[in-house]
Length: 458
Image (tube, rainbow, N blue to C red; front, side, top):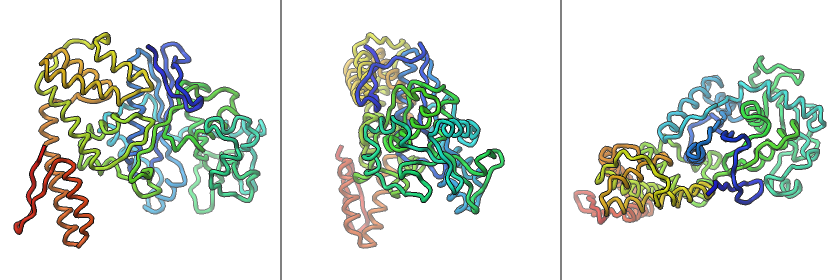
C-alpha cells in the first residue's frame, strides 16, 4: 500500500515517492498579513498540517516551508488606513496568526520565511528572466513577465493563454506588451514607502506578489521540490505564474506534485475578505472550541468544498463529543499502535488515498462504537493514537466534555438572546431562523409571558 496524491498538474492520482530518499520537501503558500486569519485560512493550514503529519508517519523527514507575505498592496493600504507602519501592522498580524494556528493544533513549519527577507533572491530571478527575454522594463519603471514567451504557460490550469485571458478580467496597463503579462517588480509610487534595502538597478520599488513565493521556495527547498500546496484560488494566476517565473529562470521543474484545497463556502459563495462574508478564527473560537473547528475541517476531504455554518459546527462538536465519550468511558492503555490491527489498516488505507480524512474519521467512529461495546482499553488506545495522527482526541476526555457542555449552553443562551433582540426589532424572519437552527440541534424553545425557556429533545 503506497501513498497516492491527486496531482493538480496531471489531474490524476499518482504514487508519491520523495525525490530524495527519505526526505520530503514541501512548500505551502501562507498568509498575506494585513488582517486576522479567517476560516478559509484555517482550512488550508489544517489540510496541509494533516498531510505533513501523514508524511511524517511514513517515516519520512519533512522540510515544510510556509511563507509569510509581509509586503503587498493590501498591506500598504491597511497600514495607511490604520495610521501605523507596515512593520507594526505585519508584526501584529503575524502574532495573531500564530495564536490562531497554535490553538488549532497546527504544527509550526520548518521555515516560515518572510518575503521582505528574500528581496535579493527575487531580484536575482528578475535579472535571469530579463536576460532570457522573459521579462521587460516598462516606461513606468516596472518589470513585467512576458507570458507569451514561456511555452508552458497554462499547464497547471489546463488551459491555453487565450482561454485564460477570456476567463479573467485583466486590467490592461498602457505599457503592458500583452494583457496577460504580470508584474515582477513594481516601481515605487510617490505616495508609497520605499526601502533602501531593496535598491537595485531597477530603481526604488518592491516585488510583485508572485515572485515572492518563487524566490522563497527555491532558496529553501531547491529549484525542484516534491510538493507545492495552497488554496484552489491560487491555482491561477498565482501558481501558474510561479511556474512561469521559476521554470523560466532555472530551466527546472518547480514542483513534482501540486495540491490544492477546496474553498470554504458561506451560502454557496466562497468565503473571502474581498466579499466580506468571512468569519475570523478569533471570532469563531469565542463560540466554539478550537478542536471542534479542527474536526469540522478534517472530516471533509481537503479537495472538496466545505460549507460553513453554526449548525455544521454544532454538529461537529456533537460528533467529537461522541468520540471523547468513548475515551472517557474506557481509559486507553499504554500499548503502542499496531498498524496491522484491522481498524488501523483501514485508517491507513484511507489516508494513503489522497489523505482521505472522511474515511479515516469514519474509522474513528467505528472504533468508538467498538470501545463502547467491548470495553477494551487496547482499542481505546488505538482510537486515541489514530486520532493523534489527525491532531485530534489528545485532551483529557472529562475536561473536554465538561468544557464542551458549558460552551454548548452558552451558545444556546446567546442565540436565544439574539432571537429576542430580533423580535423586538420586528425581524421575525431572523427570529424564526434562529428557532429553526436550534430545533435542528435538538433544542426546543418555549415562549411565555415571563420569557423563553428551552429543553433538549436529544
